[in-house]
Image (cartoon, rainbow, N blue to C red; front, side, top):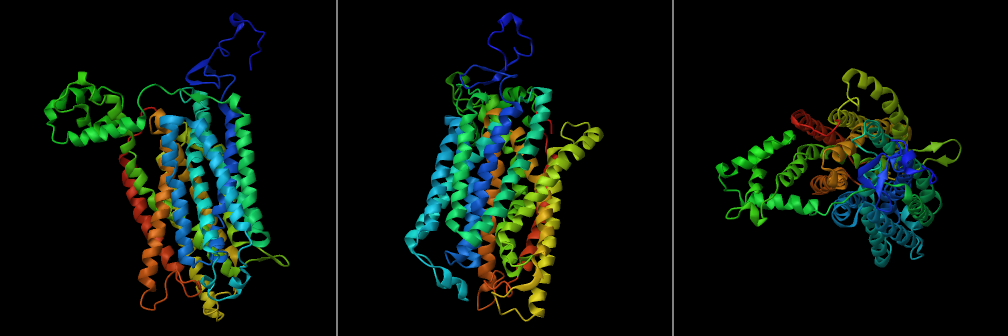
Amino acid sequence: MPHSGILPHAHTPLLDDTLNSAVDYKGRPARRCSSGRWRSACFIIGVEVAERFAFYGIESNLINYLTGRLGQSMATAAQNVNTWFGTANMLPLLGAFAADSYVGRYPTIVIASLLYILGLGLLTVSAVLPSFNPSHCRADKEISSCSPPMLQVILFFFALYLAAVGQGGHKPCVQAFGADQFDGQNPEESKAKSSFFNWWYFCMNGGILISSSILSYIQDSLNWGLGFGIPCTAMVGALFVFLLSTKTYRYSVKGNEKSPFVRISQVFVAAIKNWHTTDSSLTDEEVACGTRPRQCSHKFKFLNKALLAPGSSKEDGKVCSVSDVEEAKSVLRLFPIWASCLVFAILIAQPPTFFTKQGVTMDRSFGSGFKVPAASLQCFISFSILLFVPIYDRILVPIARVLTRKPSGITMLQRIGTGMFLSIIAMVFAALVEVQRLKTAEQYGLVDMPNATIPMAVWWLIPQYVIFGVAQVFTMVGLQEFFYDEVPNELRSVGLSLYLSIFGVGSFLSSFLISVINKTTGGDGQTSWFNDNLNQAHLDYFYWLLAGLSTVGFSTYLYSARSYIYNSTSTA
């Protein structure tokens, strides 16, 4: 921090190094030496740790709350979890739209945090209302026979989705705001930004690890109200920390031009209107496109039709500019990668639902008299991430840099593909373990005893959790960096929300699959793959199906990645 007593002419070049692309909290050009970088990024990462702690404090054990306190069947509860998780990951598109087009990232984070806190507070209230006693539900064979009053259910789901709305504004903006603290045009800060995504994911999973290991125990063994109240308190603390660091942040400069959403929408509308325009009338504009240093200009040529409005001239102001068309192309060219990652997102939806219900049926004893909460096994995903991120960032990346001469070691698409391949292996492990669990239940005559503990240690599930964790280090971090770097600067919140939407749509697809399979296999008196009695169900069939779909999705991804051309400003 420069001392106020130093005269302007005595400043060193370093102290005078201001940024044209960012301002400080007073709107002045940000100074490289006194704003942003790791000092600011660390505060923002701390906020994300608290937010993920809160979010997974709900999500990791939600299926047990729904099947226990709310008396839902396993299939219905799994669909509700997937629908809520999907909604929570689609709402960032709206949050990013508001931030990038109107409000700005900093105000959006503050407003979203307040909504988040309100949702968590109401969730806590719904859990402590003494409106019913669920103790008899645990004793009954038919869990669905008891349920709470409708008013309490409405309050619970209202609070749940209000928290999702808050998360929708918070999630894309916080990460983009954190990455904004590094100048991508500066070589040193560019390397730091690449590491930022790794350490962001590392620290974020620290919050998830604490949440899944401690909160799940509190919720199962002590009190659901306390289990929801602690995340609410964490979010209050996160907002306080975020506001405390306001003076250190770099804020992106927002121009006076039209909203990027409006510009891109106009390109698609104009291209459709001009669908029948002859190519000869676009020749000059296409030449202009070709002079831009963007190789993607040669793709999606149908969007070039937006450069000419029939019956109008450029002076009329109705013609989309070349840069507008290029922005639209930069978003559209991400779609094949986005679509080919959806099956991976379906796999990610399984640990907090069916993996957790598997664990409930197995021997969870640890030591004398202590039972490991089934939801806490998800901490092995976070633990493997915490263990592998430093290995990847400090050992594998430097070695890869020497071999490939790339700042990131391997390309973003190579990283994503590696994780997708590992996720297929994880599902194969999950299927094999479930086959063994069913055999054990049959061997000990427990097929018709849904509440009996299968004499098979719950630790058998650990490999599938660990492999999923390592897969996420590759794929999810790679997707974050990919969707941040491969969109124009003004659309980076949108880019990260597109990344999140992969997992939103994936959760909806998982819910759809469960619904279709449950109706198909459970009709005419047959036993559904998702029978409430897991000893009669066939989750193994479902896991084999997902492994097969993942193989197809991975093949599609390889084809899309092979033909993808990176943004010229990306370090890949």
